[in-house]
Figure: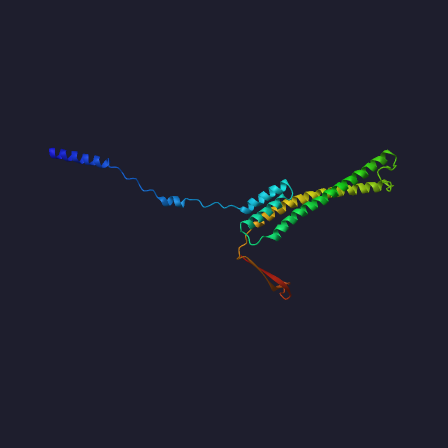
Length: 222
């Protein structure tokens, strides 16, 4: 009986010692971190440059073209392009000059048509108030007919509106040109892209299959 009791005590003591033995920490899997690293985010340089060009053109006409000119100069300075791009620089500066030349002509035309419209309107108002007598100080005595004055007034008014619409169109064209130029700067076409034109013939009568005509075949290789 003592031997049995002693055996139980020894087994219980051994179990307690094993339970108190420290457990070694499990090794961390470092490969899991490597698998979860996110790839570098793609940055669309053309989209960024296009937005900057648009904002500058909206603030002041020609400023977007000047920004594109600066991009070309920066590429030349940092050796990202071959040559000094003289032709491209002249082209961009020429567009700025064209914008201001066209804007100047349109503004002068608007002022001229607006002044003439007001002049003929004053003449019509004067004649209406003075029994159809011409205004000696307005310089329109060569128009004896009121209908002719009305037609001329309407023509100058229409011309003024057309010029105003043209000014808005020139402003929008200035913004569009700056955006497209900035986007095309970063537009890359792979060397594998090719276009091939070759002579061919087509059937002009699909019902009988007899008549044919010469044609050009366009092959696009991607």
